[in-house]
Figure: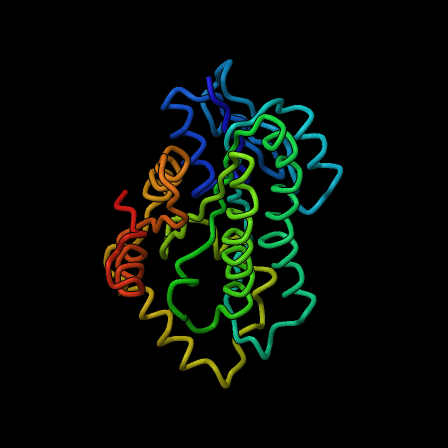
Length: 257
């Protein structure tokens, strides 16, 4: 039985990813900052562990408790929406600590066991904001774009050891806790000068059409984890797939979930 370890499972994408892998017969280690076992089915093949991806000791404890892991899904992340000029650099650093350095730290923690076994795979969940520019998410996009470049390079350096790296790029999903989780740090990030413009941006989001659902992301992560090819990118959700089509002109990296 294969094992998947998924970060950020308290809600949204991570919760759905954990449920999906478990339903498909995998052993799942679902991690979150504040464990809530009641969110997931009680099973001998599903374990909920506490994890803060910004804390090296927390990561080490999870690595020791999880045992051999076949697939790591780096989904934990923080959202941020606001005018960049009004965003304190301390807040930007906080976003990078989780979205960028947290993802890198998790990869670094698991690569040694994969290299020794010459088998393993990491799926890094980023965002469709890396597929096309979108306003008022500059810092957030930068944190995710960094992981895109990181994963591209990592995939090349790990290939010699039989280890693979993949990217899943979800579209806009109103059904996650993106805004709720970032409410405190986003307070005051829309100055009066940006008021009307921000309203227009929010209106565009409300009119996005077929938005991404957590189940779309779960299916895309499952596909990324099980695709035998060398494909790197998997767009998740109708809006992200459309952006991937527009960017590539061919849609070769799109995933219809």
